Image 1 (cartoon, chains in turn yellow, orange):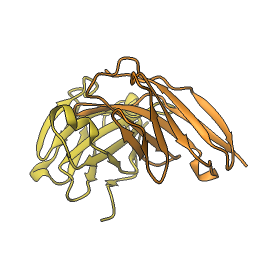
Image 2 (tube, rainbow over the protein chains, first blue to last red; image 1 turned 45 degrees about the vertical axis):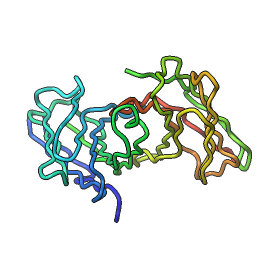
Image 3 (spheres, rainbow over the protein chains, first blue to last red; image 1 turned 30 degrees about the vertical axis):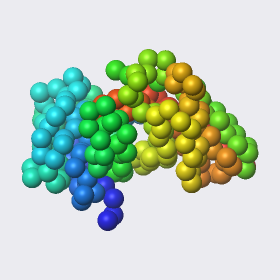
Image 4 (tube, rainbow over the protein chains, first blue to last red; image 1 turned 90 degrees about the vertical axis):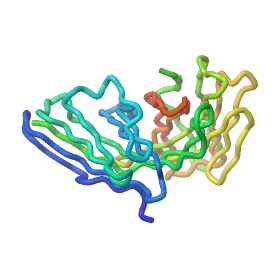
Length: 120
Length: 108
């Protein structure tokens, strides 16, 4: 297994355009997370999936953002009508859920290298 | 959101031990303490995690205070490859909240 793969690694777009990022998690991992990271800050949680179900979304995820994980495999994060404030590194992580409820905080995340978005 | 507090930056001499502190005074009984590190232009990398007891692995040791309101990541012998931003995170249910981390500089 080559780990978590993200594509494209870099994307430059003009304001108002739509962009889509893809994440291929580790094959046996059932959970997939999306984070956003701006310069000098730690990653901010956006959303996560358990298999194909999107179970939680951050209030940071505006209506212009949509994430999918069809068939519980790869995931896509689409940003519509991009704004300059969307410029950031978008990180994907996956994990094998070893616990539920109060034990799910023990899950270990494996991150991809990220997709850097620059909106001009 | 569960929050952690870390110093913005620390320095260490190469081949010396490094103790990276973290405060998490709002930790709840079921929150796990995780440490990740991030090298430039890379995604975060898992280092270690624990619940109540101290933990050791090949990368580092995690010392957890008895009241669990603070923890310390210990790198036993810092190398130049350990220069990174280290994040102390609380695994709260299904989410993991990152702070701004500690930028570790290793001096040759």
